[in-house]
Length: 164
Image 1 (tube, helix red, strand yellow):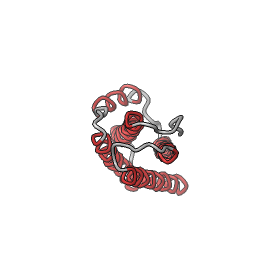
Image 2 (image 1 turned 90 degrees about the vertical axis):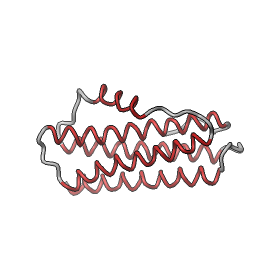
Image 3 (image 1 turned 90 degrees about the horizontal axis):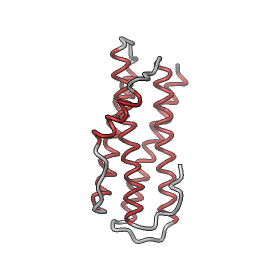
Image 4 (image 1 turned 30 degrees about the horizontal axis):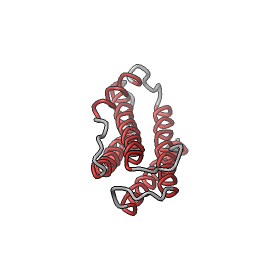
């Protein structure tokens, strides 16, 4: 996913990072919603799938916190998680997945989307010659770590899908 242009200011960087926060909040809320809806339906959740959904939620929360720290260092505000969680419930609460396969497909798409987003953000920052209000090496290292974890998450979901 492309950010559309190089990141040329602290303000633009803060907005790009805030999109990442929203993306992580969305993944976090959806993973929990999938877990909860399957449990409510009385669907027997395979231990591996249950662990994967809970791990995705936890990992997204950690990614969100890391991004918010970067945003704080730029003196910008982030979007509160409660707002995103309410939007997810409103949009997805009515259309629950009908099977574990649908949950897995959605989770894989979320992980892939996040990976592609971070890939684009990293490219945009690397294309920029701007001196940001935070250390470029720290910024890129954080984003690369998150991108690697998203790639790992996508691969884990894919392995579960393939095994089914």
